[in-house]
Image: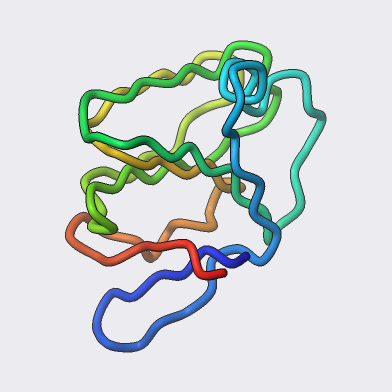
Length: 115
């Protein structure tokens, strides 16, 4: 599974190692208590409906990029600081990536998981 980004008819891969947080525990923990993540990694949180989706960086000791999407269209992109970052945006899916990985992603771009 790959996380793909298409800003303007030229798709590129953001992550080749994608983990889907689909259980109660994996959704609750997210990236907490991990020491690091690989450069080509993404943690995906998939939902059936778009609504405000928040996350925090408590017990996450490294910065990350977060991308919120609704129907594969980017609705927000933020870099969150280790330990103290917090943000909320409307989305049906959100993706956590290493800091800097989403530097070329903008609101309105297309982002999707490719199997």
